[in-house]
Image (cartoon, rainbow, N blue to C red; front, top):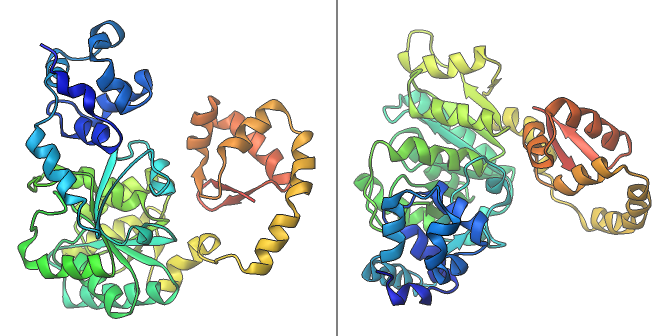
Length: 380
């Protein structure tokens, strides 16, 4: 039986209601959004679910008909009464643009702290929980160096390398973001409860998981795609070949991000992960400058003079675009000021990468886009 109150989910309530409905996963929600357009439209047209979504599993259908736990929904709305807490959806302008470019972006981000800290260039530092003194010093050194360049340090709030990276960023007067593998309100790890508070005061603590979500081994590998997705690069400091930090590095490569690794002792098992990455082509990192070299195109803020020159060039760009082919115009509309990998651009345009490559070259020759390391492109 259809619950009458499910038609009352408007605005952020509609998004939260979808996220909090059991047995309805993120991929299912995205497919529903493709069909209905907005969460509000989904809740207002539950009577059409079976007819329009024959692919929907019976358990998911029944869950949607019942709707979310109202008490849980109210808990999340109460969370927003604190001015330092926020919830953003993938449809919000405040949602990190880089994160929208990954293959599986989070539907919602729950956060504590400064929402503005999600803007600007960021680099992730990840590594072993059982870090050596050498690894801790390396994390401290590189995090401080990144902050001095105006770069936000992102990590996972775990013990070891993650904690040192967060602490060093704060001690150096910079911003840092912690991405949790549980609800933002859940005290995990317990040893880092006070650190999480400090991070929220000097950046943000975020999660895609609802409030109260307990940590689980299966959640952290999924969480790692957000750590890499928020960043222009990932630096790995210590870790075995099977460590979670290596998962983050591989996700970063899939997302078209730069990957760096700090070398260690050949006699340490914790060097196996970084050394394997370096052997595979990752940047060998000994200072923050090593990784900044790879992402410097995104770290230099525009001066007022640059802006004036850019504004004055708009009419010139408009004249050039008149002479573009329809396919070139289509690609140019897809490419933004944020780096995108050629595969992402080709997929969005419905082209094979080889065909897109030729068109991208033409746009580059016309000085409309710029190619970057790793087959990434940005709009000029």
